[in-house]
Amino acid sequence: MVSNVKFPHYVKPDFSKRYMLILGYNEEIDFYVSPVVPNHIELNDEQIATLKYNTDAFGTDENDKGDQMFFSVESLDLQEDEDRITGLSKELFKQFRAEIAKKKQVK
Image (cartoon, rainbow, N blue to C red; front, side, top):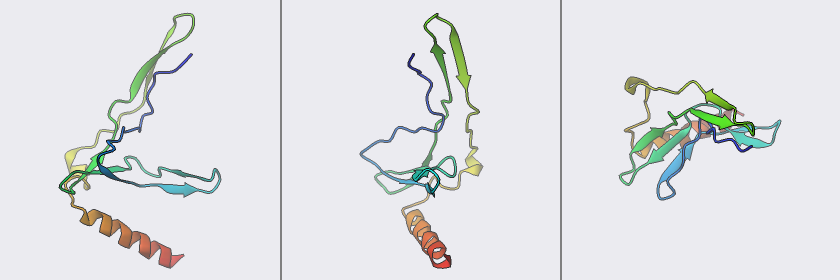
């Protein structure tokens, strides 16, 4: 049986755009993972940021007998006043780089 349930935090990238992903390194599994959701920032042609996240967090599966299973994950529903990323310019990346540099100095 192949599941058609989507990953709740997956956002399909547009490969013609630039992105910043917020990732953290997990030493236990030797892999980069998302420490926060949403973690996907898209820059448009004018270099303005948009916080991207998946609001489609449900799906159905059917087993070999025809039994259906319905899955739902609590949707991430950000209100406009909670999104402090969308609308920022490419200066956002400079701010992130500065904060990362500060963190590296502390180590």
